[in-house]
Length: 155
Image (cartoon, rainbow, N blue to C red; front, side):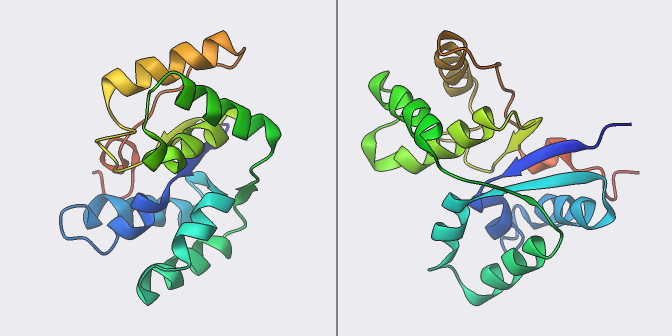
């Protein structure tokens, strides 16, 4: 069986230390440790983690030790994120949120996962991201929260 490749943004890592989200973020992290899913991380996360609390940085280091796919920001990814901006899906202040979706789209992640319900995990935003993706020749994506994805402890 093919292992699902899951792109997580920074909110999922930080969610491990937030009482509202910890159960599912930690579950997804454990899924990665058990090999249930293949983690996909990006240069964006690396940059965002630099100023995060030490515990978040430590967990990110643990994820890096699991041999994830590290996704780079290249011209193709930046062009797609720019297209999201041109369509006013996100304001310039939230450009990096669109960059997370663009990098996951270009890499053909099976599931981008986030706790960002305002800019990413939102039906209207997903439809708009997909309209641009299809127009630019990419596959549509489905974006989920860790709660919908983790299988660890789901029995």
